[in-house]
Length: 398
Ligand SMILES: Nc1ncnc2c1ncn2[C@@H]1O[C@H](COP(=O)(O)OP(=O)(O)OP(=O)(O)O)[C@@H](O)[C@H]1O
Image 1 (cartoon, helix red, strand yellow):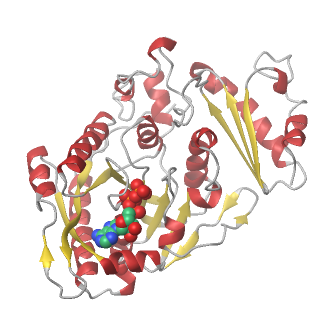
Image 2: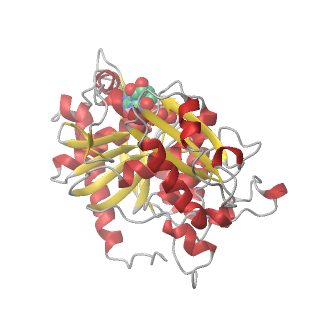
């Protein structure tokens, strides 16, 4: 395993943006993290200079990869983010407005139209769209999102993926939840993905699904200040440097919340649409509303709302109790004019099977809970087929 100093020393032969100053002295080196045989390097460049910095990024990747003991190098361009510790940086292309406004809450509007592409010519919007290219072999990518943590987004992602597989789809799961990747636990996966043919990783497999998790690439104890910059790099690598093969539907488990990190993610992954998971509590619904507003801003279609923990099923007698006012999500979906995909009760077997690494759709496929997920998957397929018949937004690439 190389030390941080070894990595920095290996970069001395590469020139910084001015072409004269060695990179370690040039002020662009955001940081270096070494985790066993994986090395993460972030290079800070102004967003508008991202394109011209690409050869430098590639040179750093080559130099670090060539060091003895390095299995994989993750080199990412990040915009200087002073004072934004912990937030995922935006992908390179968004030109920063005046610094005073850079992190303001209105910033998201800048992203508003970058996905679709009405932007004429290669302006900044077209550049932003470039980050969301399709993934070879993967036909449809959907995000599973929630307004806040702990509503069962990951449990829903895993069971929905399995239910889609039961419908005959070839399904992959990409766990992009930087705050707490859950797929290793949900699918009982402890091993790391194998690197095949140089840079490409082979996704792990469980129950017929192909699975990649940010948890396989970034250690859990990595501080958020590091995870932030690594995130975009890791997501990009999970999309592009993984031998996904032939995939009908990829389910992306998004980080919870509706902040900048989520917005960035929503823009970096070429999404067909998103599924919003919500519990019936009003508070959660308010947050789900924010989530919906966020996806509307990014022009990612909402494929529907899932109501999780809708009723409580007593593990002893099977009696159903509405702990929260049940049906809130259905009502909210109607009000917002987005499809209601269905509900999943709060039931002990759902948690137990998830904790045991065998989600309920495989543990008890004929049971009522698995059937609830099957219904959701069927409605989702119908919505996807409906949205496919509409013209897809044109993505501008340069
Ligand atoms: N329908 C359900 N019935 C019983 N337990 C559930 C249900 N859905 C989720 N859980 C449990 O609730 C907990 C949180 O679920 P999960 O990790 O899926 O939520 P999340 O929204 O992804 O959380 P985070 O935002 O922290 O990643 C887990 O212990 C999970 O097993």
